Length: 247
Image (cartoon, rainbow, N blue to C red):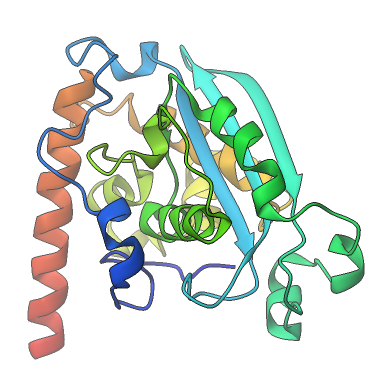
């Protein structure tokens, strides 16, 4: 369950001191063990998607997590986990993703899968559609689990920028074409998304959206160049939103 467009560390716009150090992005932004000048599509990219009990990572929990890894414009691996959030799933959340308390009753808690999830994320560029949402929940759950990972996978390193096709969708798709939700952008690009708000389907569609955007000459081909362009666009979009709110 996630809002359509989010900015800031979390969808609520609030910052939580306990995990702020985990989500703050420092300069550089690339995964240090990967060649920053190589084409980004040649690297392994781990698209992450979560379905949750709500929109606030400080109080809500993950009920499903998926990782879809692509490389060379093809899907290389898929993995998903249903998670017992330890709290009731509100009816409003169930209406979005379809999961009920009964669906997750016998599933492991996040702390029981965190090592497996981290292993799937190693050596890959982290990415998500509307990345602040998924990133916020992932690091919040990690802190609650109280498990120290050494070394951290790229997705959990504070200095690594997550790739986010939503930033490019806002730039490449005119508002007159329609919204920028994953479903709408996928439809315009001819990408199938038959099970929206199911984590694996969303993660794979988001991966395909990024590869589709990579064919646009306005999107850099180099990994470091893509990160820097995403940052530039993100700053410009945030400034535009602030001006719109003031107006």
